[in-house]
Length: 484
Image 1 (cartoon, one colour):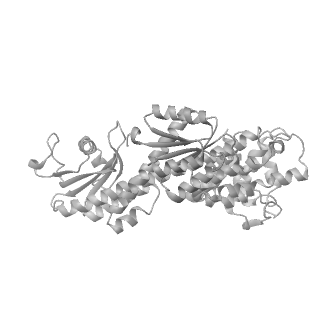
Image 2 (cartoon, helix red, strand yellow):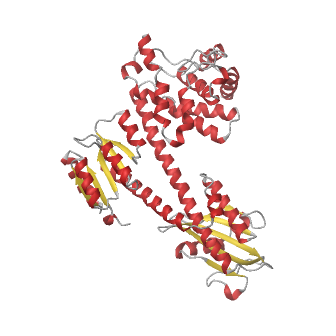
Image 3 (tube, helix red, strand yellow):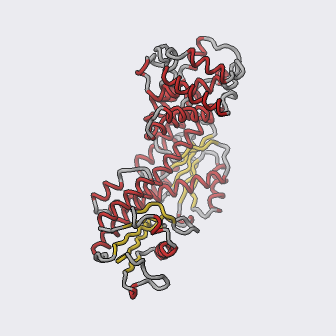
């Protein structure tokens, strides 16, 4: 889709902003409509094919959030970017919950707007392509297998494994492609058709040809059927096919399959089946990449909130990053699985996000907090839990964020959980958070030495902290100290 065919709608009650954004986007060859209100925007959307909406959140009459709701009810495919000069936590959360692609705070850079529009349009394009392709795919079993994972490496393995089984191939390789680079091996079959077989200049050349031409390549042991410009196939190979893995806009890579000498060559039926499979494989790869992009966008947004918390509290710069590191180290040491480690990692990053709703005067107070002020601080785990609760792939983190200030003896907050009733990873997070806080400067004291912090952890063993986890953490940290 060329830029000049893409129609954008800018909605803002400030005429100057509409003018500036309109001129900038038109210079980038977009067709731009502008509206000074939500009601005016509705009329434009109803009368034109709008590809993206960029709207202010606070306007007279229909607000940007109300406009977003209307768009989601009538046309869910239009990506919406929300902008505001008066950011609030509630408005940001509501916009993201309702499906806004991103949330920008004024003043913003025009280049930033341009990049976010490109990402939003790219995301929309991928969704439309995947929807179209999914309707064309008829192999139900293939769909189930390839749709069963959101991890690229595992997906690559499944694509190759299923392709070899359905085509009765003796060997195979999956090569992906990056623009301006030669294809690169990402997965191969076992010996004798392992990486050492495929890591041959001829196969890279063959794959480059498939990428360039966007069509399958078929080669046989018979020299007369060898593609001009390439040498004959290796002696042990009877038949070779290479299928491009592509969407309507680009080629992602190449699926390579071989049958050994003495076996039948690939038939037309094999080619038809693998063609369908290659189409499904392309969709799955693009879906997983899109899914991961969506995850990245969510994390960047939430990470931005975490940074906003630290911006409010001058003494906690880098706190969340450090807590995340300590949490991951302890989680690995305790033998958690990869998924649980990922949950603990992100919970370490997001554990204090609820402080965005706490007054800066309390967060930065140099003296002792009053009981009322401490009650305000104690609200942050619940606030944090609510912030991430409606983000689909962050739901698993809610118990960790909510309970990272529970005490092992039941005297913590917010729910006074005791012992093993406290989520396992929340107990890990509690120790990492406490140690990082103790060894960092705070408004009311200077950083404690690691040795002093270790002693406090020992003292609170079985009271504030899980005793076995304290022992594990001390073994790790004191071992690192000994190494130095």
